[in-house]
Length: 224
Image 1 (tube, one colour):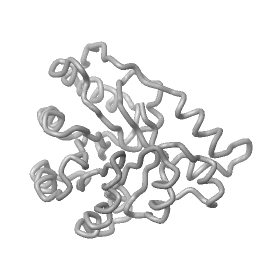
Image 2 (cartoon, helix red, strand yellow):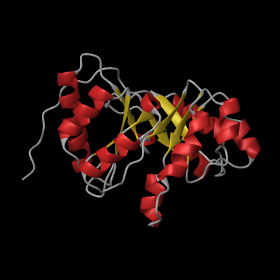
Image 3 (tube, helix red, strand yellow):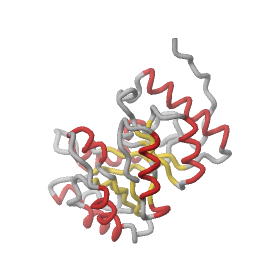
């Protein structure tokens, strides 16, 4: 599992302490994008949809496409394809068709969407992201875990070698039983200043927690 550490991380000295890690930069807060490409192993470019959804602000997808373009020249940089949280699948698929950067992007499957869409996306794209929704807003709640188990049961039926699945804002799933390829979070950016914490110490703890490589099919609980 790769752990993408969200930015901005301030001051610059704190960011420098994390040289050699993997980073996530959001279009909503892009100020560290140049620095992390100089010091990081790989970079994930987030489309800022979650920040826009939380704030109620409009998105500028053309601006996002243009911002991504030069950074996607780096072989280890990839981007989250624009999505709209709590929108229908037709709107999500329309955004996929507009994406101009080919395989350098990863689409988002939202947990309230049909399972067949997740399977289709994993057939068509090298990476797929999973995002929580209002219905599954509480990560690790009973409903959330039940839906995740269902998703991995279906993926394991279709793929002998599981596809690359990234959990958006999923760092807390490090070490859990779902075989995720990567996760991200802004935990270090928000909390490295707390007593007895440091960017390096926190990154060591997260990066050392891994998920299994295979999925053991789990019984699915039916909702009453």
